[in-house]
Length: 342
Image 1 (spheres, one colour):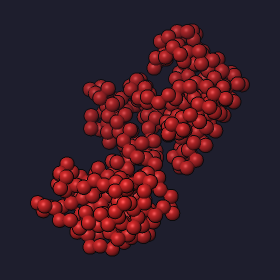
Image 2 (cartoon, one colour; image 1 turned 90 degrees about the horizontal axis):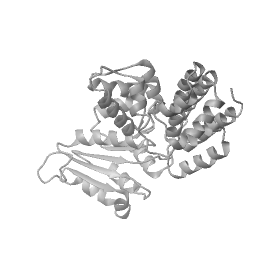
Image 3 (cartoon, helix red, strand yellow; image 1 turned 90 degrees about the vertical axis):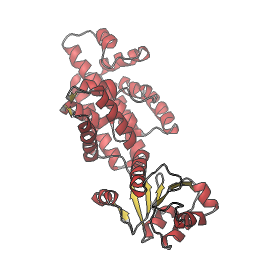
Image 4 (cartoon, one colour; image 1 turned 30 degrees about the vertical axis):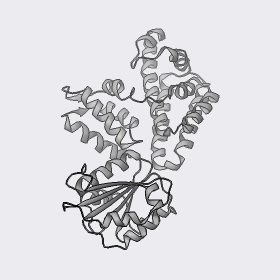
């Protein structure tokens, strides 16, 4: 069975084995799937924009005519050179075409198949894992080590360092989708350009406001102690296809802001001042719920909430299949905690 993991994946992507021209990329991190597919295409042909060198297919086409995959792979480019095929897998099965291709003498052609989450018994995954000329690579949300490497890699390009507290918060906001993470880091690098170091304020100003998803009702309800709203809004988010890690990231941002605000209140700053001039600036529709949250939680208990959310984020990366369960359980626990006050 040829299913690469860990360091073997990096080694293969850096120098693909010509004896394994069929490469299946699958998993829940669609951004990582695309990023790896782009890299494999770039190293497979001289010009990825040349339609004679790079052919794009999808599962609907191939399920209707599985032999087309073999025909395309065996075609010699009109003007010579290398050739590549990029396949977007969907719900239609074309595993028989992969089986036939795996037994064919493919030369100077790389076939990259992009797919979403595939179970071990999936025909496509099984076909690629059992073929001697194919390899299957899972693409999962980045762990802490991968995120740290990604942050350093992107900020180094702009000659930026990152403050320790900013790194900690940033790590909690990224990871659900590699491409989205890169986009957020590039936005941060542009925002902090010339400063030499990205700060926590930079992260909160740029990354914290990046998502257009309607997550505020879920998070605000949790900290306000409204379990019923947490359940109903969380269910809506799942139906809409929201990745649970994004919701936990939003809760982490809110917990950090509430902790900072609670410390200010303890030092004598009026809550009304924080709501009007807080950072990041609150939308007027949220002020009531946030004011309740500040009454519910003092700074010491918010430290515990921050740790609880960090643990949940880590567990979700380890157990992606249970991400929604872990996220909802954590938010409901926060809502129950909020009712105790103090």
